[in-house]
Image (cartoon, rainbow, N blue to C red; front, side, top):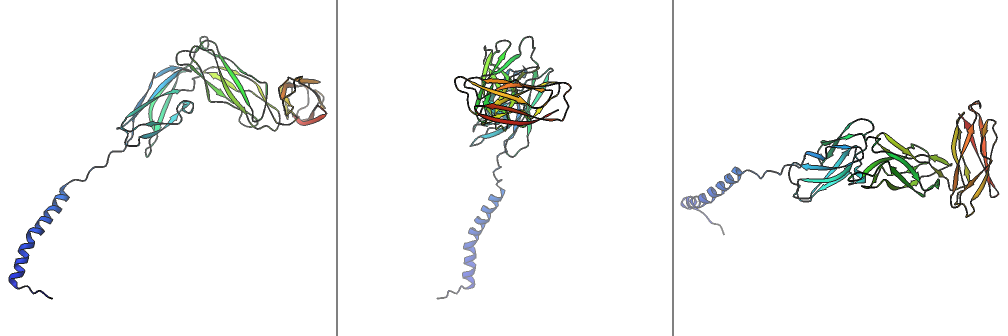
Length: 333
């Protein structure tokens, strides 16, 4: 069925539609005039602080991270950078909970050696650049008042893959908050003992212990990890040994005594073990025998080279124990 509108009907339809069209146009104009809701400003870092701002080597401090506005839902993780051992205290990042603008946490700063040092501290939030947020001034410790005096290990020799306990000792009891000492493995290649980056001596104490772990070893090697407090330093020796019967070294120095070790590969029995040693180069000498203590996998000894011994010559050191003989080629340098 078709409907035909007369001219009068068409005019009537237009009159009826005119208010509807006008209302729709007004609604569109009103929507266009209403500004869109602004996106929330990105969270950035604001200047922070360290308290106290000036410390003496080894003393703790508290760092505060500030944000430009309150952390949104889900909070904000802040990455930390600086000459600070964050990993031993907080990790390399801290969390600002939703609704908060700051977070504070303890830090331990590497000690100044002999002069005042200003250490800048930097941080970063996701989507922004690394920013300097604070700094701390570190004064050297007076060695007449406080110093590290010794580092000792509970074993002279350890097999690769096993642990050793180190003990650091201070000149005087640690001050309030404890005192941190920087600890170093002092090996860039070859066998080593891994150590923590710092050891904290508790408030009022003069000693603290830490655990080290011997790495892989192809030959017996004597290493000397150390602990420092500013300008004072103490080192302790320990031999890292392979898990086989072996003897070192591969290099000896003319006119000096070179520390090396022999490894049984297993702990010695209750009566210990006697190892016979020999060397085939004139001017180079070793003890005729060395005794490995009960329970120890090896022992340190010295290879002595005369001052007039020819350099660059090759020699062989031989060890005999329990019906076994092993040798190692060495060079005189």
